[in-house]
Length: 442
Image 1 (cartoon, one colour):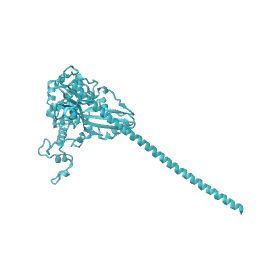
Image 2 (cartoon, one colour):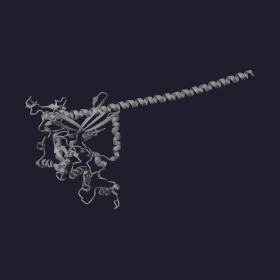
Image 3 (spheres, helix red, strand yellow):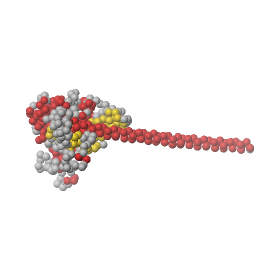
Image 4 (spheres, helix red, strand yellow):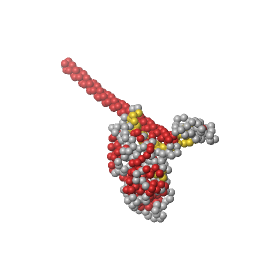
């Protein structure tokens, strides 16, 4: 009896120890799970903090690139004023174009990251807010369209921005009804204006991407590639950036000698002037073809290629030189193959809604910063002008504009000193290279 009680007591204690052991094991498992979860959260938080830090660094690097670009444009204004005060020009040999980096593809190192800078002359492109229907038709035909399709899209672009409600080339048709019918909508007598699927804003284009909303325009025509491959191209570009091999598409396309797409030769900025020193071969071809009444695309392309090869800075191997930059239409006579007829065509370009020039005011500064796995791009549209102030003007007396300015300010004193060419200065004006931001895009 006593032995039986002992055996039961020992069995009870063994079961208790087993239960305690099981509870301890479960507590160890739970604590392990909690510890693992906390460690995972800490790891994720640290990675997020690192990525946020890299993003901030990349953003500041992009801003630094933009600041460097503005400094280049300011320096270019001062150099122009000192070397070419009576006949200023802008060309690919100028400091803003960074000619020393023409054949390089390495980013600039700054701190823990890198940055890339590209300055694009917006006055080298066709302004879709000023170009007339003939010039727009020439652009469509350059990219492979034929009449009447090229005429239809050119007229649709004009109708999108003009103030009236009449279809270009047809005084009887109304814009919204006409283009809605072209897009397949059936118009009835009781169809309301608000029910039409196509509506012309009748105001200037705000962005070049708005061309995609114009009747007849397709992404394939605008971007120059198959829309179905666009996502794959974005993914490839993102993968290249992730492994540090990102390259600007513009530079890569230049190396492959492919024509620039329409999206890169049009602009909504500026007044419609086109700088012959920086205009692409595509833009020059379109202008010459349109000015020649759309008669000979091959001749226009040959003349455009001669201009680009002479001045340098195109897709050829010839580096740009200040001595080859154009300062007037007469300078184009030095280009092999250029004749009086071609010069007359360029001189009459004003009838196309654009005008040829040799200096630029509006630029796009593109700064790209990279730090670790983060990449940030900032695009800024700026206006470049050398502003002149007269300190003797009564309206400026007592103001900050009447005092000598430091930094980039340039002052010429009447009767005092000589310029670097030994010429006596003729005025006492204060000149400041002003870079004004028109649009900031992040």
